[in-house]
Length: 531
Image 1 (cartoon, one colour):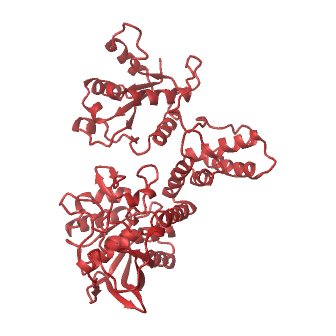
Image 2 (image 1 turned 120 degrees about the vertical axis):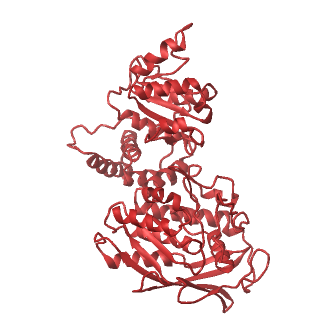
Image 3 (image 1 turned 60 degrees about the vertical axis):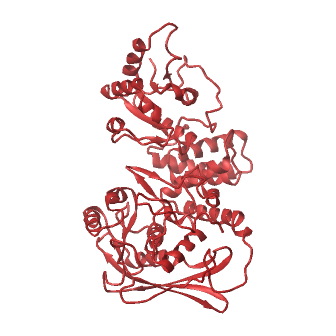
């Protein structure tokens, strides 16, 4: 019998066949109707045995599949037989109550974001399952276009090297591949070995390997067949950045900065210096002072330059002893605020300089941006307090705490005078990751200045702005939605659109939105205008 069973709706046959061919090429045995039903055979006679004897159940999940009685029966039998369920989600669709029940706490693979990449991830998971065999002699080695990139799926040989743990293998793979790639006397076999080692470690999730492999793809030192090597390289760099690799984070910032200048910055006509005006050519006035104003702001025209001064009073509420270096923590917080400084081109070509001054205060809650380092029970308590105070995302705070490193509360309604609090969580529990703290503060400072998060939540699913909504932002997408330039997805530089939205928020005293929300708040007019 076959190790893998593929369940699908007939309308999704082409995708199911694509997945099957890929798995077969990787040396796996796959059962799929109608290919594996003898001529004249009945589906009902063969499907139950195929499910009972498989080791992994791949569900091609779409809206149509959720309404298929055959898919429901097959999934129900797979669950009753305690099979490994692997939902391969080819559409971004809301799960029905029945499928939410079936798939509770089961990891899915969002193929609608990146189908080849997610197929690679799912295949790697299958290869780690108990009892899975590869390269069965009875399998037909089908050469298929869909199996891309053309890489080996098995672990490279480490025989005789005394490497016992994955960490040892990753370290060896990175160092040995670098040696082989950089040696001018390396043979073709040496370079194939270098590729095999580095790609394997990157695919297994090692951040250093993912960064190096991605960088070589982006700069053209490695090329893949049937796939955009640069885009695939940015995919691996993005994976490394998500795992905390500082070099990868810097590479993404640099990449997006270059793209921004090429796609947008160079196309903006110069304008003569004059006081800042909005899209309707009305003069913009900003001046917010007072003891209860956490971020005092003033827009001035000085020496033929528009300058927006932001004075931040910050109070540090360190609630965990795990903050091992308070001075480094303070520096990261301060740098998160001042990361907004610089010259921007806004409102059709006008120049605007941002200057941020940070003052650390000993007084909490009153007229301050309160910064709290929190984890565990303290984080849960903060969520309850935030919800009780009417945080605009109170119904989703638990999701935020479970999946994010930070969140902001701003009273019942955002205004320039409302209380502002930033809560920073840290996966390590030590709060010693300078870059993570800095980026968390920078991200949440945007919310404090009046930007809504670009991130919507649908249960556990993160929904980003769809590609094509604002064409001027599309060049910054990696893998069709994993990343864009907007500050509010937690990565990358701050864009001119963000600064325009901040100016509008401070001048109009109204939150600016990236996407239309359930309350009917419309996206900011800064979006869609372009620069």
